[in-house]
Length: 224
Image (cartoon, rainbow, N blue to C red; front, side):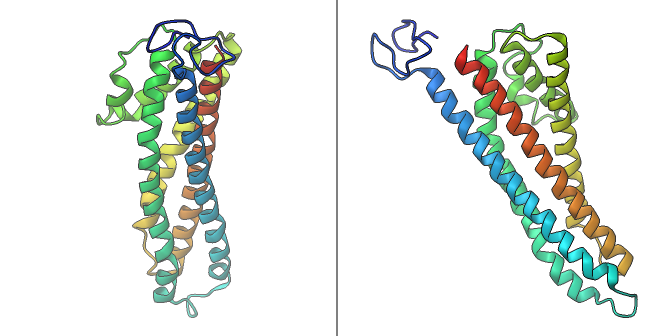
């Protein structure tokens, strides 16, 4: 990899340019990748913990009857979980900003060919309709262009990226349904809890699959 300051070639096994002493860009890129990986792991941990706690809350509801059911008490019990989902969305936004920084550099460092301009690395996430299908294509493109893959390996990468995006969108939708759900009746409360558990599970799985993409792309690019 060429040095950003003097242009001299920096060997893979060292972190500083032998000519000018500047830090290699791969070292900075690895640090960003590690930071994104850890934040995603924290998001997955929070989502998984929320899902497990909601499962415990579901047990009393299964044994309740229409006469013994207390809507006010159930609403108070579920309110903190709605706050957790809101905080989780904020955390995901913060993680997403760092993720975009990492993806911007990963796109630039992948040899190509690229179907889309580099600007779409950012625009794809904020334009309505486009942000439903283009972001995973950009991530897949960066992944397969970062190394040499056989057809089966490209298909496996596509499954990981597709699974991540499907889980992320599903978890986001279910999380919003959960936070706006009703607990007026026992059936509504049971449904709302089940939706919350599903939302937490999809969000945790999405974070885990995203961790896999970050790990693989970072590993390939810093060892190339």
